[in-house]
Image (cartoon, rainbow, N blue to C red; front, side, top):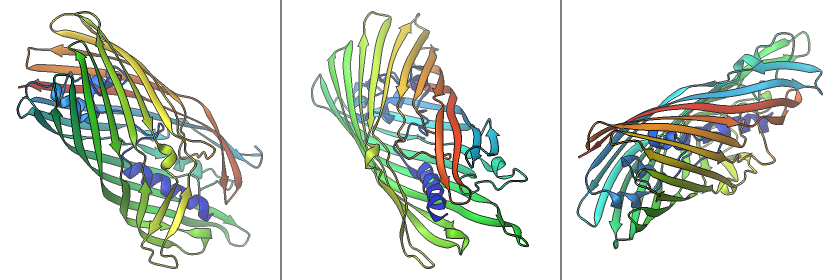
Length: 422
């Protein structure tokens, strides 16, 4: 049982603290404008201050101070269907809604210093979700795979400070510091059936309450061919997160093992975006984003209080992933702007799959609008439907053996944002 208890622990802390993305967990909710165009061109469009989340060099495109404040409601849906083991002879059941919705706020401020320098500060969230599979542990009359099922709650906040420098009329560079705060809670418990006369015994397999801070960075460039055509490129350096707290797992139903820290290597992100104003009213834009999840090899724990000082919790076989999107923007008049986008989001799970990580390739369908009250005030609304593929998962439980299930995940994003140009 040790291997899979560790797997669940590692997955939960990864969600709580990672700054980079796995397709299965990235909320991609940094702005309402981005939600409305499937993040297409977000690293270079610079139509409001939220561009700071994607490319610090794009701050050089601002002639005056800019503020953007918003929030996204992520209605995340995770389905776990036809959970069974013993070759299908023992059905455990299904769960139609294993995830909870989250409100995800964001804040951006950009201030030009002169015609060369600008600085900005931001706070936004890359992850924030909750899954609860505990109803599947309470099926009467059978032994359920409690080592694979349970409750997870995670929250992350990314604080960013950046500067940009305009080299000439075409090229600008940017540099930023990321400070990431992650918190997470995880429980895995239930009854284990032992031979008579002992019978069912309640067991606490995993109990985690951990948080941590990490430092990363981002570099970027913006290249303007002319006022109608420009390109953006950025690279985010992701840190190794150390999360600390109360970390317990129960190896082999023998004795709980306690650790104080978890160390998590995280993947870097490269992003390229383009923007083209084709007419006075119509523009197209696109994004190609690559995440180096192949560098995410394992998660380890240190600071053991019992028999072990350190241990590798989980070996991963994740793959590099791509997020590709294309969008369009149309200015109806001086007050109204509409936009739309389409994206394909590649999953990261390779040969190793899990009930607790229902990842898959996903498709984005996005639409949004902006209403400008005047040259200073505007409000954005964005909506995205994310549809994931149905995936067959087979995961080994140390309690009941191989467990088969079908998982599917998706989301509805609703975003609202206020912008002010000074």
